[in-house]
Length: 562
Image (cartoon, rainbow, N blue to C red; front, side, top):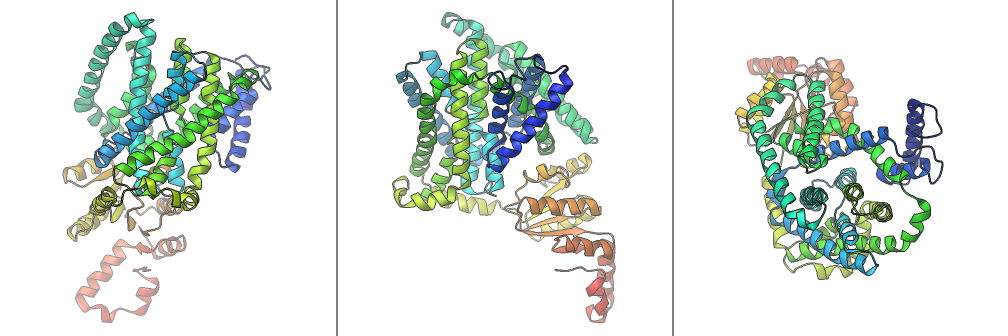
C-alpha cells in the first residue's frame, strides 16, 4: 500500500475509522452507504488527503466484495417472482433497459463523446440498484406491497441483463477488435454452455446432499458458500467470461436449495464490508480537478435518469392495467443507477474501452442519482399526493391486472410462520394445516427440513436469532409468528427482531416455566405456551371439565393468555 503510513495494518485501521465516521454522517443525512464510501475514497485519495493510492490489498478486497455481491444476487434469484409477475417483470425490466439505453446513447453522442463511450455510459444508465431499493423498501415495510413485488421482479430481470452484458463486453475485450468478436463470442458461448452444464450436474447430484451435511455446522456452511463463490468466480475468469459471472452462477446454483436464505442473510454483512473497499478504491481514483468538466453532462444525464426512467416504467405499467399509484411508486425505484453500473464502468476501464474521465462521469451520475432517488423513495407517498392529479394519463379506466393479482395474492397468503419443527412444532403445524391454515415452517436442523419437505410442507432453513434472515420471510402476510422453541434467549431475540422489522401481526412463543412466560409477555409476546403445563391442564379439563379449574391456574399458572 502506498501512503503516508508506515505499515498496512495502521493504514487499514485509519481507513476503517474514517469510513465509520463518514458513514455515520451519511446515515444522519439518510443516504445509502454507497455514497458515503465513495466520499471516503475521494477524501483519503490523492485528490484530497493523499493517504491511499492504488494498491494490491484494497484491489483484492474490492474484487472479493464484487464476487460476493454477484453471488448473493444469484442466490436470491427467485424465479418464482418472475413467474408470478410474468410478463410484467419482463416487459417493465426489458422495456426500461431498452428505452434508457437507446435514448441515453443519443444524449451522450450529442454531448460529443465517441460511440463506444456513449454505449458504455448509456448501458450504465439503465441499471437500478437492487441493494438500495430492497433496503429502502424493507425500511418502509413495502417489499411485499404490489409495487414492491413489481420492482423486485424487474430488478431481477435487470440483474440478468447486466450479467449478459458483462459476458458480451468480456468477449469483445478478448477479441480485441470487431473482426474477431464473432469467433470469440462463439468460444465464450461454448465454454459457458459447458460450464453451465457442469454446474447443473453438480446441482443435481452433489450440491444438495453436500449442503445437507454441511448445514449441521452453520459456520462451515457459510465458509463453503464463500469458497464456492470465489472458486466459480476464478473459474469464470479463466474461461473468459469474467469473475463476476462465475460468482453469479455460483449463487444461482444454490438458489434452489432450502439453505439459500440462511446463507444469504449471513453473507450480507461480509458482502457490505468488502464492497466498502470497492467504493473506496473507486473514489480514490477520482480526480476532482478533472471532474469539473463533467459536472454539466452529469447533471443532464442525472435528470434523464431521475425523470425518464420512472416515466417509462409508469407508461408500461399503465398500459398493462395497473393503477397510477402502483405505477408511480414502482417507477420511483428506477430513478438511480446501480452499483452494477460502476462495476460495468470499471470493467470497461480495465478492458481499455473507456478512459478515466468517462468512469468519473458514470460515478458522478451515480452519486447524484443515488442521493436524490433515496429521498424520492423515502417520501414517495408524499410525492404521490402532490402529483396525483396529473398522473391520470398513466392509468387505464379499468385496472384489471392489479385486481387479478390482488386476488392471486389472497390465494397465496400465509397465516402462520412457525419456528421450530420438533415434535411440539410439527404437531402444531399439522393441526393448523388440517384446519385449513397456511403455514410456513422454519428450522435450523437439516434433517427436519428434509423430512418436512418430503411431507409437502414448505419450510425454510434459518435461525430465529438472525435479524437479517427475518427480512426474507413473508412477515407482511402472516397473521401469527409462532415459536415452538423453548430457549428463552432465542425467543427474546425473535421478539426484538420482529419489533425492529415493524411486524404488525401477533406473536406466540414457548416457555419452560411460568416465570419465563411472564418475562416473555413483558417483552411483547401476545401468547405464551407452556407445553407440559398446558397439556396437563387440558388432560384435567377432559377428566373433570373446565368448571373445576382454580382461578390461580389461569392468572399465573399454566396458560398465559392475551
